[in-house]
Length: 370
Image 1 (cartoon, rainbow, N blue to C red):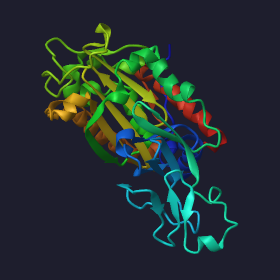
Image 2 (image 1 turned 135 degrees about the vertical axis):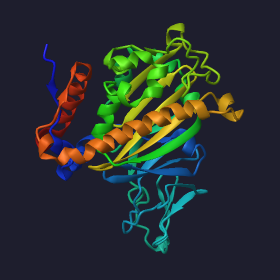
Image 3 (image 1 turned 180 degrees about the horizontal axis):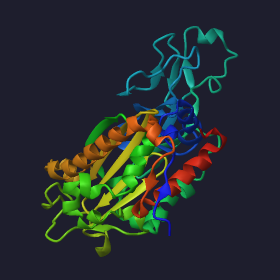
Image 4 (image 1 turned 90 degrees about the vertical axis):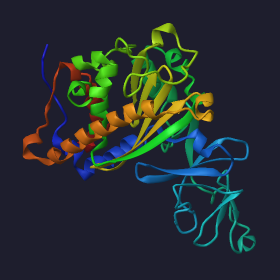
C-alpha cells in the first residue's frame, strides 16, 4: 500500500479559469441546496442565493409549492430582488420599469401592457429553475435536464450511512432552526470540503471535539468508514462544548444511533452532521477562487425551539470547530499560489478517501483542467 497519495496541484485552488469551469460544470449543473424551507414558509416569502454565476430567487406560491427563478427581470435585465430576503403579497415588481410577476413567475403587469396584446405572459415570465424540497431545504438545479436527485444527493447519504433509512430516522424535515451562523471564509471551497472529510488534523486543532469524540484523536474521520458513527467518550452526556447533557433527544433514533456522531458530505456544497438531539447542516456558497460563504444551521425538535431552551453549549461546540477549521483553510489558501505547492501536496493513509473527491472533480472538469 502506498503511504502517500498526491493532492490536486495548487492552481486548482487559485486559477480563475478553474473556478469558472467549476461554476459551469458543477454548481450550475448539479443539485444545489439553496435555502431552508422555513425561510420561505409562507406564500410570497423569498430568499436569494448565489448558485454558480447566477443569482436565484426562491419563493413559495399560493399553493404552497417552492418555486425558483433566475433573479432577472425579463425586460431589461435588472435584478428583480436586490435584498437577500423579504416578502411580497402577490407579485414581484421590478423597480426599474415596473414589470411585475406573480409567484409562479408569470408576467402579470407592466406599463402599457394592454397595448401589447401579442406579448406571451408565460414566455416573458421569469426564467424558472428546477426546485424540490428534501430534508426541509429547497434544492435547485440550473441544468436543463437535472441529474437524478436519488442518485446524486440521496445516493451520497446512502453511500456514507449504508442506507437512507438511517438518515430518515432523524426526521430532519420536521426539525426547526434553532441557530444560524454565517461565515465568510477567505479560502477555496475545495479546501473546506477536504478539511471536513478528514480528521488527521482533529487532535491538533479541535480539543473540544476530541474531548467529546475521543476516537478522532486517532486521525480517522467518521467519513472514512461506511455506516460508522463516532462514539461519544466515557462520561460524555451530550454533543456539547463541555460534554454536558444536551436537549431533548430525537425519539425515532435506534439504539445504535444513540451517543454517536455521523457526518456526510453531499457534493458539491453540503455537510450534514447528525447527533442524537440535533442536526447541523452546512451550505457552502463559493463566490470566488479564494472566497466561500458558509451558512451553518443548527436544527432541533420543534418543542425545543418553541420552548426557548438554552442552545448555547451545543451551538458553541460546532461553532468553535467551524472557526478552527476555517482558520486552517485560510492559512492554506495563500500557499496554494506558492511555487512550493505548484505540484500539490500529499495525503496520508487516513486521508486517502479525499483522493476519491479529487478524481470526481477532475472528471467533472474534463478538458477545463489547468
